[in-house]
Each structure stands twice: as structure tokens, then as C-alpha cells.
Amino acid sequence: MGKITRAKPVKLIVSFIFKEEKFFKKSKIILTRYFGELDFESYSLPFEFTDYYNEEMGSDLKKVFVSFKKLILPEQLPRIKRLTNKIEDKLSRKKKRQVNIDPGYLDQAKLVLASTKNYVHRVYLNDGIYAELTLFFQDKSFQPWQWTYPDYRTPEYIGIFNHIRELFADQVKSV
Image (tube, rainbow, N blue to C red; front, side, top):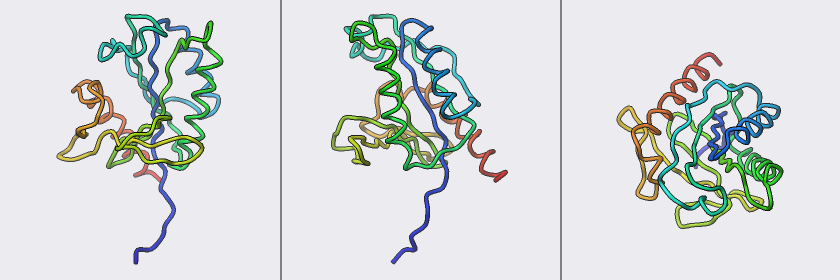
């Protein structure tokens, strides 16, 4: 029998999909009030991998990833996902989201995303929130699973997560 231990802190990451930058900036400001300062922000990436959001948010969407300096515990992910959903609702116009905010976390071994949708590769956490194991770390880089979203498979995204993983590795060395 294995010994039960507490989970170690992980790195909070958040992605934002938006058309108008002002909604990204507003939601980012709100999140920094809750989780503190950022230690990484990607440049705006064109979001062209699906038209899933086009009816609600329009076309020519952008995506930005951020990570927070302060580490979290993995069990906080459901609460964080519920918070990001509330922020999306608050910034909505005429019942249409202006920003999609997806939290997750990474550690040395994996990238986990939060979801409100169940599927075969998602595990229920609590309060209507599921965890999706999106990438795993092997051979000095993050790698996709068969179910990994197409954009998360790109060298550009994987490079972002490898960089954030390095930030995380430096943080946990100094603890």
C-alpha cells in the first residue's frame, strides 16, 4: 500500500480567446486580483483551429496564454474554473461571451485543463468540473495525447508550455 501524501503546488495557467483585446485585458486584471502577478504572457496568437466560437464571438479570434507567479494546489482547479466562468458571464454582451477563459495547471510531468464537459478522457473533480490530461512531458518536451486539441499539438503552443515549465522548475528549486 502506498503512503498517502498531500499534493504539491502546481503552476496556474490560463488561456484567453477573444476578438477585442479590451475583454482580454479586463479579465486578466480580474484574475490578477485573485491570483497575483503574472510571470508569463504570450503574444496574441491567431486562433484558427476551429470555428466553434465564431457564432458567439465572431471571427479573427486571438488566443493568449498567461501563467501566475504564485503556485496553487491542484484541488483548487474546480473553484478557479467556476470563477473564470463567472468572469466570462460578467463580460458578456447580449448573452454572448466576449472572452473564453480556460484555466489549467502544469507541473513537471503534465498539463491539465479544466472543463465543464464530460468525455472519455476527462475525470470528474467536483462541482461540475472535469480535468483533462492534455499534454505529458517526455523526451525533454511536452507531448500530445490522441485526444489533445489540434492547437495544443503545435510546436508554438508546446514551446510556450515548455517555457512555463522551466519557470515552474526554477520556482520549485528555490522552495
